[in-house]
Amino acid sequence: MRKIKILDLFAGGGGFSTGFQMAKFKNLQYEVIKALEINEEACKTLENHLGKEKVCSGDITDPAIKDKLVDECQGVNVIIGGPPCQTFSLAGPARSGTLEKREALKNDPRNTLYKHFFDVVSRIKPQFVVFENVQGITSKKVKEKGLSEKDSQVIELICDELESLGYTTEIENSFTKRYQILNSVDFEVPQFRKRIIIVANRLDLVNPVPVRSSKEKSVKDAIYHLPLRLPIISSKGLRKLKNIEHILKNLNYCLEVFMENLSSLAEREKDKQIKNNLENLHQILLPEYEELRNKKSYKLLGLEKFLILYNESIKELGLEQNISVSGSFTNHSSRAHNFRDVIVFILTQPGSNSSRFMDKKSADYDKFLSDLYPYSRDKHKDTYVKHSWDRPSSTILAHMEKDGLKFIHPEQPRTYTPYEAALIQSFPDNYSFYGGRNAQYRQIGNAVPPLMAKAIGLEILKLIDTYQSVLKEEKALAKF
Picture 1 (cartoon, one colour):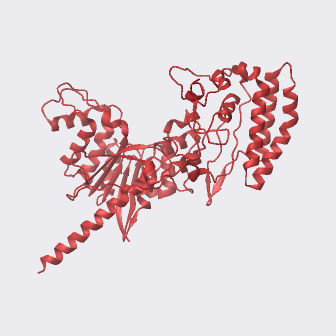
Picture 2 (picture 1 turned 180 degrees about the horizontal axis):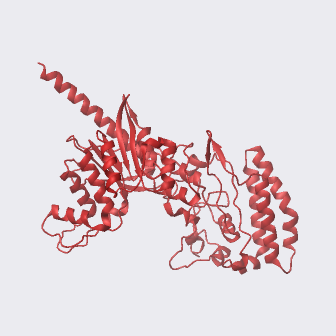
Picture 3 (picture 1 turned 90 degrees about the vertical axis):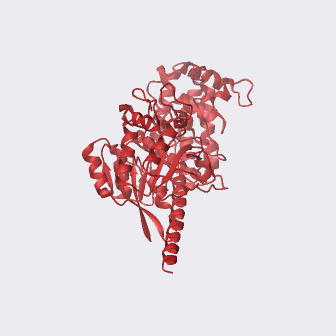
């Protein structure tokens, strides 16, 4: 196999390069020569999957690191990456032409990562560059008076910059746009996730568009097979929990909902051991449940005692532990939740959200849940989002570390585990991430879905193969 060499800039947890390495065409496949990343946990993740020698841990703005990277990556065929693009503002007037606008964009200190990305490209001169970013980049503009609508668009200036370096940004079957808006759901990723992709080449070829799949993958396709996991439920601080008075006023109802959910999970469970453990959990909790139902006072203390017993029991029964997949230890354990949120998780309909259960006109309206809702109804109506088995997930986000309530499991009373988030992102099932839970969520949420990256990489391999065939024909004809 002929290896097409890759440099991955701003590599994160490795989604982009993982997808490219999945792509193969005829005798062509990719090999990652180097991956640059500044985050320590992400670097450890990359080292685990690529090898320590292929990971450059450091800041691209550091001249020594950048010089070393450029020296080691001469001869690289493809540079891939998505520099975090925060502001895209112009530092000072730049009205006299495209070159000046590009220079102002690059030289603004707030846009240094953009500048250094293209500096590396200009010094290595790979045959292909693949630039990735969030869809929001299409609405970003340089803040300068006197520029036309198109001239002020950051995405157009990025394309201009590539062309100034000798790259073609023309796209197959498009006479106007030089960038593509791809949705990961079109590439068998069980997730709606739009991303901007610019493919550019120095071979004077029209850039390919990845082939979309006719198959739509669902959350069920990605994670239904995983063993059931239950969350630890915080027993401390119940008194300060917002709207706890609504829970205590309706405690018998909440406890009934909770216990019925355990029974329902046990009924549906196909794994005999887990089924037995769920049934045992129900039996262990039953006496405490009956006692708490009949309490006329000290309900808060009784609930705390009930939750302590629940937490101890799920640990003993192994209903919250991690699992090992293909010899790789992976984070399939739930984050801790509070009792209020767990009740919301159970009662919210799959595929619904808090905006609907608070809307009296909606079929999903639930007065109890509406009264229990603890957040601002003006700014945060859709805080709780429960996914459904038969649909793709919404976009997996890096801030799942702080805001997991938009990713409620379709069936189990918790939010997605890091492992589930990774599978929904289309990472291989034995791909492990280093760092604590929050660090893992960041790496997973920031990643390019590997299957979407694979589709992009495959079309580039096909183009390289066609180009090589044409060169061979031209050489053969030259002999006549």
